[in-house]
Length: 595
Image 1 (cartoon, rainbow, N blue to C red):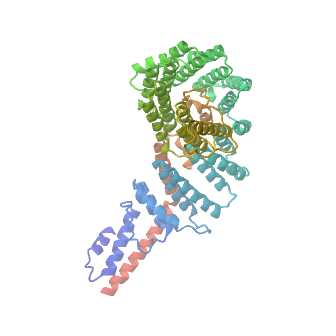
Image 2: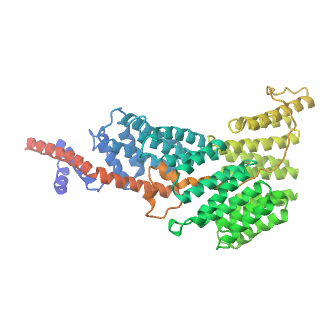
Image 3: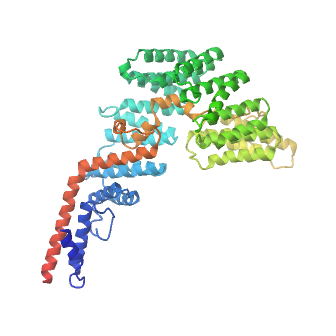
């Protein structure tokens, strides 16, 4: 057949132009059918560019051959044709095409594009399947996962509430999965009552003992955050350890979970200033681990938390020994283990307390230079702010301002919808403003305090009131010092008071430690897989890095193509063959006319 079509393609176009055109189209479609080409040629498909189903399958062919850009354009054209409220017979194929666009956007790190594509999918699902359907509830959960991945936890929590409301009536909807994610989102937002309620609900629904202990640890961690609730934390931790002890070997024990529970027990003791008991639990975690390397992930966390606890209790020497044992091992290691940057930050704080500001700057700067243990933008900003504070203490004001400005620059390009970015921006600006006030630069202090209050407007009302009061104090000092200067506007209904510096350094914690217990309940890997429309079971056949978005996206595309081949390949072949026969018959008729 191809030889015959090739012969037709070589005909003199002057004598049989229409027949040759039909032969070219037939050759092209046949080559797609045989998998020999995936290039989308609008000219050769003239007349078929308004057939979504054909376009979708051409897009899948392009995707199969790694031509993502071409596939995206084809899918975009195809799905744009499917905006009717009446579902087509091939609606599953349309939704798969939209899934492909979502996966590609996530692989590119294009959050806005992924959210837009997912909302378009949700609109079609709502129109075609129903606005109170299980399918829509699942899509809401997927979008909530995307928001959570990128730190937009408020948006995530709102969607999850709607998803649970719709989906809870359906057997094929996983209520527990959504409740877990909602609990962790509220946890990160510091909505302690809301997250506690959702964790407790999840605990009543969970059947797996290992998962129960993770939820108990998350609840214990919540109570550790609240002053006076240490006993409640201890009760959960005792129950967690008891369950772990009783778990049968066949059920799969998790040694790291036990170490994490012991470290959290130490944190609980530290929260009520029982340094002796805190040290006991940190040492218990170290002694329980057969791997004695200080940079083993569990050992590093135990030593780090022990060092922080001793430092806060005033035992600078003991803290130095804890941190030093980690750094001694790091110096002998070829790779920098995760968490080293925070150890360097902690040692910098020790230098700062001992008024060795040069040494503090050196340690803070080292933490910024670690390529294999990169800090988040928020952590980098806080580190630069601490360097700025150290330079201020040395009366090097130019260097101090340069580092505070660098701190704010770290946050400028980040997503300002993220709660973490909002809180960090407000914190850095308030610290910078305090230093400007100390230097009697009252106008600049006023502006910076006002900006800090604005940045923190959605994070904490008490912080906003505090910054507003400091701005007002700066304004009044400015007027008192130089009555000729036109004062900035007064901040109504806010009394003024002199800035209180308290802890002049911004405490920097390893976010992986801060969110470790909520992440154990609902991991980043789980969020990515859910956003991609996959289940954890889809990835059990191969080892995947827990947070490698690119690899997970590649696996999701492979899975999507497998599903498409299984469900649509034969129908697509029939569709293409039908088109092919039509062109061949037209070509035969045209040739007969030229005889």
